[in-house]
Structures are given as C-alpha cells and as structure tokens.
Amino acid sequence: MNLTERPFRLDVADDGELRPATSTVRRRLSDMAGMYHDAEAERSALAADDPLVYEVFQYDMPAFAGELVVCTTVLRAGKVGDEFFMTKGHYHEQRDRAEVYYGLSGRGRLLLAKDGECEAVPMVPGGVAYVPPYWAHRTVNTGPEPLVFLAVYPGDAGHDYGTIETTGFPQIVLERAGEVTVAPNPARTR
Ligand code: S6P
Ligand code: ZN
Image (cartoon, rainbow, N blue to C red):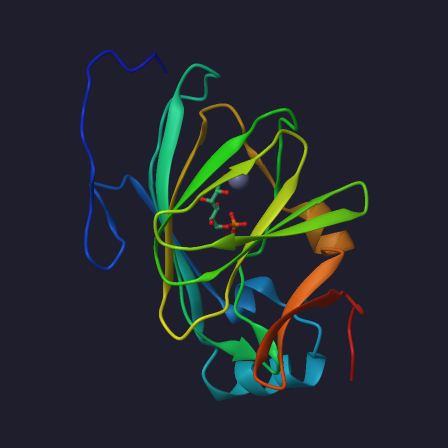
C-alpha cells in the first residue's frame, strides 16, 4: 500500500455516521462478554435481546506512521445492571502511538489506564481529549443520548484488545443513587 497522495474530505452525518466509511464495526453485548461487572445482569440482557452497544465508522488508511486514520464512534445509551454502556477498550498495538478524541454529541467519560493508574476524562460536545502514548482507553456513555465522537490516530497504531480482555480496567463507571460514579473495578460480581 502506498501513501495517500491527494487531499480528500469526509462528512459526519447527524447520526454520527462517517461518510464515506471504508469499514464499519458493530459490537453487541455478546461481542464483549465478560466485560461488565454484573455477570447476572449481563446474562439477562443477552437472553433478552443482545443489545447493539456501539458502532465504529472508519476511513481506513495505509498502515504508516505518517498517515492518520479518521473514525467516528456512536456509543448507545444504556446499562448492564448499574454499569453504563462502554466500548471494549484497547491499547494500541504499537504502544507509543497517541490518539485524539473530539466529542460531537452526548456525554460520557474517557477512561485511561496505564500501570494500574486510571483517569476518567469527561467527554462533552466540543471537548478534545488526548490519549497519550502507552495509555489504554475506553469510552463510557453516561447520558440518555448516544455518545458520538471523532477519533484520529496514526495509521500504523494497530489495536491490542487481548490485554484489556484479560486484565480489565482499574475503574468502572456506574449509576449509584442516580449519580454517575467512577468506582474501583470489583471484577465480576454475582
Ligand atoms: C481507535 C479508537 C476508537 C475505538 C472505538 C471503539 O483507536 O480508539 O475509534 O476503536 O471507539 O472502541 P474499541 O475499544 O472497541 O476499539
Ligand atoms: Zn485507540
């Protein structure tokens, strides 16, 4: 694959879909089994309707450091038990590759983790969040509307999902007494 030679433009539709997109990922709850802390709530949600949790619309680029991948994520509103809908979360395969998130609509948190340390950065429309090199990242929708954001990252970053599937994040985001609460991850309960 060669470097991109000509400028181009992309559009983000009102519903968050990137147009054109060259690849689309749709993740249902069954695609992230075992990631929510309440195993029983997860089982009943899977048995009921296996909800669509999020979609990613991406314009794929050649896998070079000098290229930038552009994509949008539409993360649905919802919960599994008391835990808000979230993305799987990942490290970049090339750990020293950074990323920028730009909030388009909806509200949530960007969870960032490195060496047992965790930060929860608010995601709001018009807010820019920076994912530094070496930090795992996951977004959480804490509001009643879809959380929509645009992300830009180097073409050769790659994605490592396995580490988070095994270790989880140090923190989770829950609704407790009607409040959005960031709490230590108790691992699986029930
Ligand atoms: C890619 C970037 C986002 C996520 C998307 C879904 O580097 O961080 O586009 O891919 O938000 O999350 P995940 O963890 O399933 O890739
Ligand atoms: Zn990323």
